[in-house]
Image 1: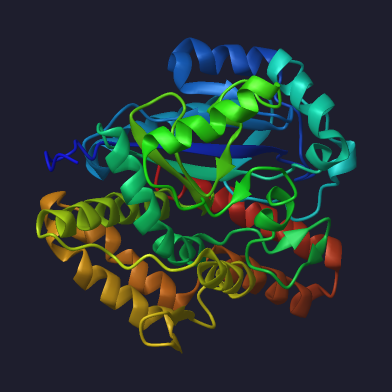
Image 2: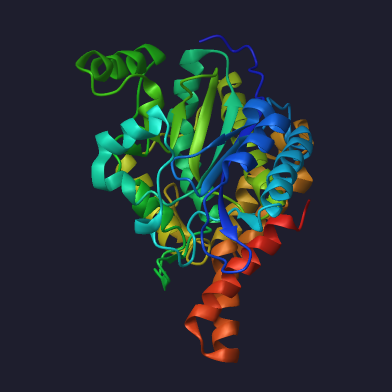
Length: 377
């Protein structure tokens, strides 16, 4: 493979839930609200599977500084238009108390087909994610970096956890979203592949049989994009705080460049069996940043704060290249102070201690998520 440096451009996609500002329960996006958002944001906004969801995507950005301004504009528009209908967006991967049985899916051919194909599994998809695209022009390089970068997916997940509650209960997991998403086919860690050609041939088997229409129905945690010359990280919960989104995007970008940089020195990151990486994926899903991950090189569990310090050192040259050291400096702080899941639980506990009212405590969590969405706008 040629060692020409890729663009390493980034694009960020986020999915939001819409809530009623009075009841704080989920609410459907009014047609006129979606039309107003589309008029301003064009193809950077779209409906999602459920009527209570909305998806945005940044333009192609060189770094997180460009992405920040675009993401602010996107979030601000959705918030402003939603407020006209007494609604507010929240960027959490699960709503703390609303029932999935009461939600309706968007009436579009794509989503009607999903509902038909995936039956009861997709009906529970009341979840939101965050996707980060990193521009890699060479197709075989995309696969090579995907193979190596899988090691770091649990690290990104642990930092991103924002879905501890489901249907009004604390699940005990920090990312309950993955529990729902993993019920779909073609999800989870990506398999190891030797080339882009192998990926295309494998996907083509399913296309030829008529199981899927294209590779957009491959929902791995990290995949070659079906639309763009990118690798697309899909592992993260969506972030209530804009600056945490930028931290995760910058870290994803830096990891990709770090692994490419190793190749320029005739080195590479060791590729571990998915069985072992899956254990770290589970630990991240279950505990977030609280219990650490297995350092597969050392063969021991290492605290997340230590792992983040090490990852910042590994990617230091790349963070400097993209001028994103300040953004990623949040990662050790998240590892030390907790994720959105930890903050949501603290709000819930404080409200329960004050009033001993579960419903009021859950509503307080939603109000907290509304406040966090707007803190950096």
